[in-house]
Amino acid sequence: MAIRTRIPLFNILWQLLLLLLLPCHPNLANAAGGKWKLLMSNIGISAMHMQLLNNDRVIMYDRTDFGVSNISLPNGICRNNPNDLALKVDCTAHSVEYDVSTNSVRPLMVQTDVWCSSGSATSDGTLVQTGGFNDGKQMVRVFKPCSTCDWQEMGAGLIQSRWYSTNHLLPDGRQIIIGGRDAFNYEFYPKTTTTNNVFSLPFLQQTNVPREENNLYPFVFLNVDGNLFIFANDRAILFDYTTNTVVKTYPQIPGGDPRNYPSTGSAVLLPLKNLRAQTVQAEVLVCGGAPRGSYLRATKGDFVGALSTCGRITITDPNPQWTMETMPLARTMGDMVILPNGDVLIINGVASGTAGWQIARNPVLSPVIYRPDNPSDSRFEVQNPNTIPRMYHSTAVLLRDGRVLVGGSNPNEFYNFTGVLFPTDLSLEAFSPSYLDAESANLRPQIISPASHLKFTYGQRVDIQFTASGLLNKDLIKVTIIAPGFNTHTNTMNQRMLVLPRAIVRQVRKSAYQVSCVFPSSGKLAPPGYYLLFVVHQDIPSEAIWVRIN
Image (cartoon, rainbow, N blue to C red):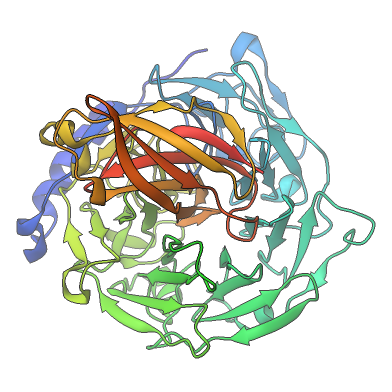
């Protein structure tokens, strides 16, 4: 393996210049916390897509038709593809596996184009990736989590071309693949005799704006009743995919501005709580984006300011209504990461323009933490800024130790390191929220049992033992599980947090405690698969263990 280093000096000079030129923002003076660390200056590719797997390795890739990357394929291997639009023979990698423990990358080989694709980690931990561009639009590829594994191309496993689609795991472990460019329908993977077809979804046609679209990479969340909440452009439906029926039509988000690609806001299903209640409440938060018409104006050099609003809606209410909130920093192309304590990190993005080649300006360098349980006037908190612009094609995922891995940013059609306003970025960073500060070490739990990677069934009770060196407030202990999502283009597919019901916390010996919890009752609450389990004390999370629920 060889990693070429063609870029550091220019990028360092650019970052210093950027800090001098960016206008001051009044909110940045109130930056509360968080620390940035550069992990690798050059991973060889631009991390446009990311998925954490249950072996604590992160799969990343960009696209095969970018030209020569900065990392060679191993052992002299070359990719021979007569359909490639850049290089018919390419001896460089366009996917890597990042090992969190060693802070190193291993090159991987994808044969067909994976650009702007989608994916899900399935119930057995395998990453199933679908679609892409050019010869990859109907392809299915799988990656199994092992130290020597590589991508396996499964052939044309899709009936419809899928480019800018969204995947979601279903309660039975299948994936549903929804939408994409000129794809106003959905299909399933794997297929059965009754699902070996595409199924029309007129909602996607209705939300498609000519010449702008604004409904690609729709936001999709599995509701607690087993139906799918689908948000595209400026509106949403609750959809029964088993009968191809719209169960509910939600109100248009106030303002009517688009939130999906290329206007590119972001969305999360807020943490699910009170799982034993007769009706579990589910809320969705949609933040940022760009005003209507921004994409076409940006292509002509007119970079409209991004949206500063978030819409929050309880999707399980009989009469759901949007509640609007204002972020301290306007943002489009931002990523939203659910943190182990239930807070939401809003990170990456720009303050003007939209997604697309070189049509965005004013990087937003400061993340924001959103605390959903705080009073409405004290939910947002600006964090310390980084120095690297993370613009179009940036990514962010949560790691098992509570850090957030950040990479990507390539607003250019190829690998462009010089002569452009925002060069292709090949670096990898970690953002550490303030709960990882040394001052919190005595509050931080450490899980001692069960062991990681054990299997649990729906509704099973588990006794969790943990230690804490400082004084423990037993009333401020919670146990959370998070399904790591597939992140690309500000859409983190399958990201999901649940707060487990628990009994009282009791001390079992000095500085050691036990809490009994119950796993969710069905796949409607938690689709089968691997989850990160955290013990959280006074909003300070432990390092997670992996649990498999089915």
